[in-house]
Amino acid sequence: MRKPMKTIGVIGRVTNPGVKETLKILIDYLHHLDKKTFIDADTAAALQDTSLATLPRDKLGKNCDLVIVVGGDGSLLNAAHTLVHDEVPVLGINRGSLGFLTDIHPTELNKVKAILDGDFILEKRFLLRASIELHGSPLHSTVGPGIALNEFALIPAANPHMMEFEIYVDNQFVSSQRSDGLIIATPTGSTAYALSGGGPILHPQLDAMVLVSMFPHTLSVRPLVLNGEQKICIILTPNNTTLPRLACDGQTYVNTPPGSHITIQKNAQQLHLVHPQDYDYYETLRSKLHWGHKLQYSE
Image (cartoon, rainbow, N blue to C red; front, side, top):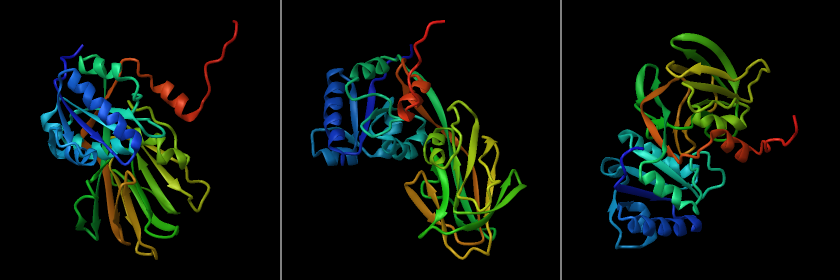
């Protein structure tokens, strides 16, 4: 048991009616437990409740013992980009469709109480950081917020079009490719975009990342799993006739013209993700990916 959490931050994407309902119930519940509660300023504005104590999102991590995100995995991804810098514990309440990261159901507030009392599993998930250079001169010091919990994806800026690029790992040449793009994913992101592209599932505790090519021009190209400490460099050759862009968790994008050098490596800060004590990663996989139940048979 850890020490109880006294100051709680709350974030939610209120465009979903279910999120608004859950937010109101959660805030009332936290007040009932006599917890000091700060609501993300944008969330509070969407709730149109002037009685709520608010803080800007970038201040929540410094002032709270725990931040609760109400929504789907996309909401938690969005919040993680800000909260990771303070390494504050983050808990997700699922109002989305999948819920790989937000694993508490809205009706399970008793699990929230147990977590606030210090009874929880703490899991650290690493993120990736990207920088882009053009012919050796800084073009963008970072991409959007510069970090990705799921993946960076090199994709065409407009219509699908084959790109040409080279891949280096720790300054060693790996391969040259012609494909529709490339996904560089963390273990967290291995069940997201990379999975749909045919990549493997990496257990969250692995210190690894995976490169998944998108529709490569040759059948010999396969996903490549790397050590999480390695540095990846992608060079877009001058031969490209299209304008690629780099997507960060599918939420921010930056153009990467031919000649760009994209460097991707592990971010210094990690996301501190909180789970209830009954959390079971394999059960999450079974239920979300419909793998089937344990068979009943006699030995």
